[in-house]
Length: 150
Figure 1 (cartoon, rainbow, N blue to C red):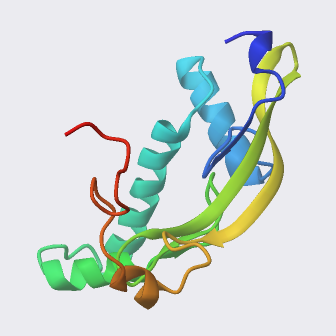
Figure 2: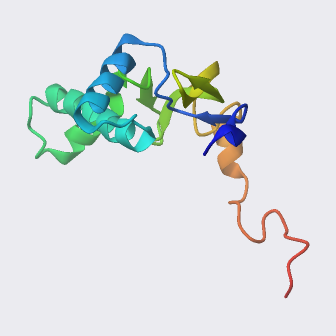
């Protein structure tokens, strides 16, 4: 995209402009190796590797005990890394920062500049998990779709 993207807001769990030493090193390494700015697919795979590394250390490399390895994965709490702190909830879903971003021009290129950070966002955000899960699953019928043709 070009200048039409300037000022557009979005939210995500990653931006190459996260102001941390870990992210600056990560961005520099990806740019040096691949001549590209990393996106969330790149950093997501890297973060998965960090999770695996911590869990493998916890089980001393003995991943054959699958139950112990899964428990170790669920116990990982990354305090550092390119995306910031991340851990899993009791359902195995990430709790992590969400970054509100605005497209700006910096250094002659468009970037997703961070304008706000919402810390420790879970899949339920501000909702009580038990109440949320007690509701019917979202589908074509819930809530009722009123403007569909039969």
